[in-house]
Length: 100
Length: 238
Image (cartoon, rainbow over all chains, first blue to last red; front, side, top):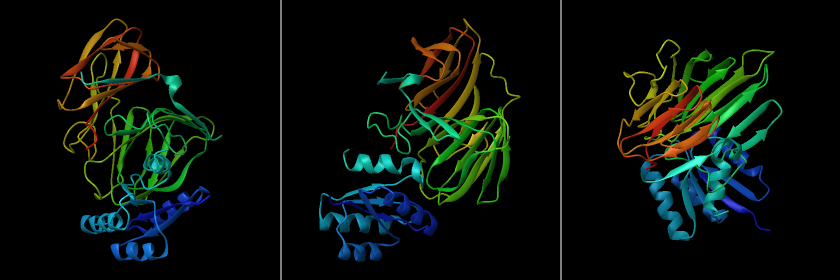
C-alpha cells in the first residue's frame, strides 16, 4: 500500500525534526520537512504530497505561496495548520485531513 | 442557546502508559474521534495522574496555550525559557508556546501520585513570544462564587493567555444556586465538574463530567452535593 506523503513546513529545526520523527513512526505515513517556500517547491520535484502541514515560525507570505503552489499542482492536496508542535494533536490533525 | 454538548466522564478516552493514567475529554495523541475534537477554542482537557517520581520528559510545543491545574500532589516544571517552578493545588500554570518552547513536567514527589488537569486552548495569535505565568489562587474566595483564575489580560486576575478566554473555579455548597455571567456574549461555556454533583442549566453533572453550552448571557449552577467546578469560557474557534 502506498504511504500517505506529508510535507511539513516549519522554521524551528528541533520542532520540525520532532514532527517528522513522529509522522514516520506511523508505517502508513511518510513525512518530509522543509523550512521555506523554495524548499517546499524542491520537495515536490522529488515526491507528490497528499497533505501539507503548516507549522511554526514561517511568515504569512511564504505560507500563502506554499498553499498556492500546492493547489496549482493538485487542488486535492490538503493544506492545514499544525498546532502544538508535538504528538498531542498531530495524529488527530492528520486523521481529520485524510477524512479518516 | 445555540447548542450544547454533554460529555459523561465514562465517555472520555482512557490511556494507560503505566507511569501515566490519562482521561481525555477530546481526541488526543493516538485517540481520535471526529465527533470529539474540541469545544470552540478548547482543544485539550486531560485529567492526568502521574506516578511518583515520573513525568513528561523534555518535549516541544508551539502555537498553543497550555494550562495546568494541579488537584493533588506537586508538579515540577522546567522550560527552555528559563523557568523552574513547583506547582501545588491552589495554583495554576499557563504557558504560551508561541514560536516554540521545550519543557518537562514531573511529579516532584517520589512516593505519591500527582493529579492535574492539562488544558490546551488554540491561541488567538500565531508565533507569539513564548511566555510562562503561574499564580496562587488559594487565598481567593470561591465559596459559592466564581473565582477568576485565567483571563486574556496580564493586568487582570489570574494567569494570562493569548485567547479571549476566562477560567473560573467555584466551590458550591449543596442546595446553593449561583449564576455565571459571560465576559463576552459571543463565547461559550465548558463546565468540568471536578467533584460533587450539580446542575448546569438543568443538566445534571457528576464528577469529571463535562458540559459545553453556547448561552446568550450566562448559565445557572445548582449544587446537588457539595461541588468543586471549573468553568471555562472560550470563544468559537476562528
